[in-house]
Image 1 (cartoon, rainbow over the protein chains, first blue to last red):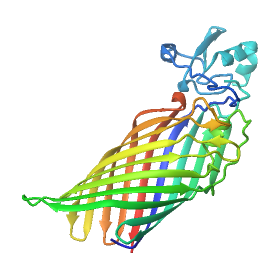
Image 2 (cartoon, one colour; image 1 turned 90 degrees about the vertical axis):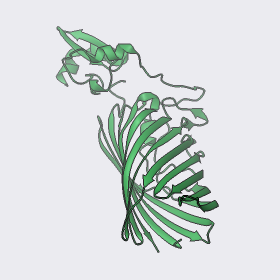
Image 3 (cartoon, one colour; image 1 turned 120 degrees about the vertical axis):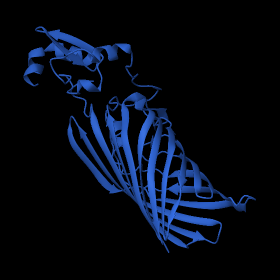
Image 4 (cartoon, helix red, strand yellow; image 1 turned 60 degrees about the vertical axis):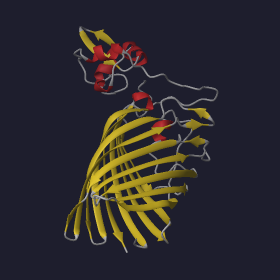
Amino acid sequence: MNKFFVTVIVVAAFSCNQPATVAPEKKMETIMAPVKDSTINSLAKLEYASKKDLSCGMPISAGLSDTATYKGKLYGFCSAECKADFLKDPEAHLAAK
Amino acid sequence: MMADNPSQFSHDYYKTMELWAGWNIGKKWQLIAILPYNYIHQVSDDGVTNNNGIGDIALMANYKVFDKNTTSGNGSAVAQQLWLGAGIKVPTGKFNVDATDPALVAIANTQTGSASTDFMLNAMYNVRINNFGINTGASYKMNTANNDKYIFGNKFSANSFVSYAINRGKTTVVPNAGILFETTAANKLDKQNIAQTGGHLLAAAAGLELSLNKVTIGANVQLPVNQSFSAGQTDLKVKGMAHITFSF
């Protein structure tokens, strides 16, 4: 057996994330429950007027949990909060598209 | 997820270059020092973030419990080795996070270090029957809290590879394939579990090693077979590894 050895290792990984964004708080075991149900899969099959959640900017391919129709067009949202935010002022969100 | 929350979606690229310096002491002991350098590149809705630098240095000591070589009546040569080891990882990397930041988890995962002193246990069992080899390993990493009271979840990992050595003069070519499994407990802040952290990964790997005199080079590609990280919010797409080893 050789007495010494030197190794150089290169590891590369690629991942996609939708990170949790709620600050951990004391006295809470869990903070945000993931939204995963069959509704999400069926929503993904619909056609949308935008490829992004117009509230938060997340690509709709990353997952949807709600939709809204505005002026005859269907928009997808990653959460009910984003949908509500969009519906407060749809024109502003569309202008910022 | 609201518009004023940062980092709603991201593509993360992790690259680590590790320099391993090993010292075989007698026939039973092996000391290894590992110096990592991390390159973390994150592309999100908020823009591009790069975080590069020296990671956490690790020191390992391995002990060879047994090393048996037997030859059966039909001429088959069987060699078995069992190694057990322990190590420590020291906080030489950077961990600059604000514990009150809503994107704490995402930011913590893109630091070059954990700012904690962590401990490792590992075991490795190798069997070689003529040109066939089976290498199986397992390790457990116990993490402690850093000054921000943040603890990365403890991690158990295991892998098993089969290989076949093809000798061509002074050169040995060893194709290999195997599986890797890892499971990580939830991260904690001030002793409270953080939701949507931790998870597991089962991956399949295939690779090739080439040895010539005292130099060995090798590479493999790992593809996830089954995974659930951060409550399904993080998906590993592909992982690759390459190495070169000089013995002297």
